[in-house]
Length: 414
Ligand code: BGC
Image (tube, rainbow, N blue to C red; front, side):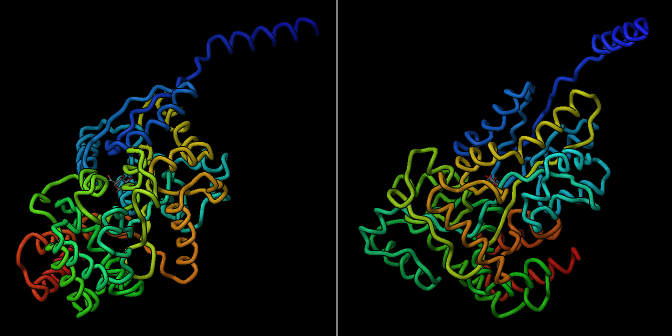
């Protein structure tokens, strides 16, 4: 009896001594390189480090993530995918279909994700019934940011219709002020375009045109009116807009070089990182019209070899959806937590507006996925639309021609 106990204890000790505990490691590909973004991703790096992990950073600069996605394709093709990748919307399912994503259901189930995530968002994180991505936040795309002092000095209120916006822009131009800070990059053109589609067409039209790709909606008079408005907006930007990064456009509003920017609430992360206060230095409001365009950042884990890397992926996924990261990260990033149980007490007025309007738009059917930020369509389809939007914005193409081109471009990728 004694001998048996001794033998069992010795065997257990030997097992302990020989089992090496995997040290979590992760190479993380992301495109968070602006001031506010870098401050936000540093929160995740720190939490990962504090939990014993080793983080290898792979930042790929370029707003909207186009350059990051090109880098990802090259890495996967060479058989050397990073462990964790900032990936979102239908691109998650596209990569899963390629057979290169890990199933992270074990982490999701252990941490009760289904109980704390809204169902619509959870669905974006699933591939054939398995959890295949971890959600970070909810960004709202349809925001307009303004320099408070410029508006006050010029007797302008935050516009609630596109006509009001156009009138404000004329007034500002007459006073020698650039109305709209914009960066002429395709994804930024697309960002502005989708807010105009929502504003002028309404939620049902947005759904038909940019989610269902209904040819009638794409070729409609409403879509012509959207391109007319885009033409007016083209007249509201400064001469050096071409190629400008989005955060430099935000800085123009901050520094009083332009009155407005139309951009998702990662722009708020820039204002905050620069010490600016909402309601005092800058104003936030939804772009004219009803509805809410959501953009959920998330991370997917790619198939990698090695216990340390797998441990790193599991740890990262757990931290990302964890309540502490959700709060601190989103305070910096400008977005709101994706978990429904994180208090917004420490968040600012723009975050409160976002949360309230997300709830009300979800109830009235106007909560919609952003096409410009990869939440609504597959890559080829959104790319076809963006090509037309940017070609129109950067030429003197008529709205009639733009609409024809849009219908043809979408038909070619159906
Ligand atoms: C991402 C944001 C990011 C922004 C600018 C968006 O597509 O969702 O997290 O800050 O692009 O790079």
